[in-house]
Image (cartoon, rainbow, N blue to C red; front, side, top):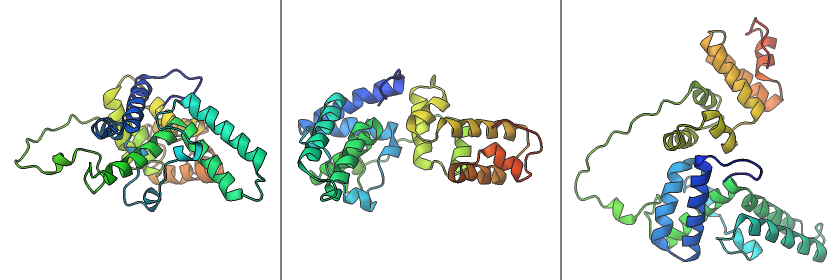
Length: 262
């Protein structure tokens, strides 16, 4: 799911291979192949598939239908087909007369043109498709239905814990990410420990580059014992909602005596 103009890392390359395999299996109605690959993608990106109980998931529709595309269309085909469809729509219609249809096309195109959003869409639609085929448990867990019926106790295998940097804990305390995002970072770190956690965070779009710098500064300030967690949470909230850099917020509130560059 690498963006154009950047060099893919190991996780990006892995996801590209898995995404291509998922869509090819889906296009061929290969239920077994879809489950195998979708399960791996859900383990690697658990933050991209919302809970089945979500109302938006229940109403999810296949966006490929808006453009008459196959689900296994390449990213280049997705982009070109989107622009062709929008151009044709604007030529034949007045957007003021059909605003809802126009916005729907724009939203659908935006989702399919963004690799992470497209994968999230695909996982949701694939899950619904598998449920319709009664190929996975009714709770929406993407796994083989036979796995539900366990006839004998299975040995417990303890996973080797991965200690994520305090940076991740700070993001969770500031409610920037939740448990699924932490799980995603944990699984990705297990797969590619050579990739800096900062790169994983930015590639996932959890924070902007300026917000990441503030988080790194907070990590340093914690090590120095200069701020507390409640102070950080308030200051980070100021940055994300009021546009005030975290360091400036700490200083203006009198919580940081020394002058620190944001």
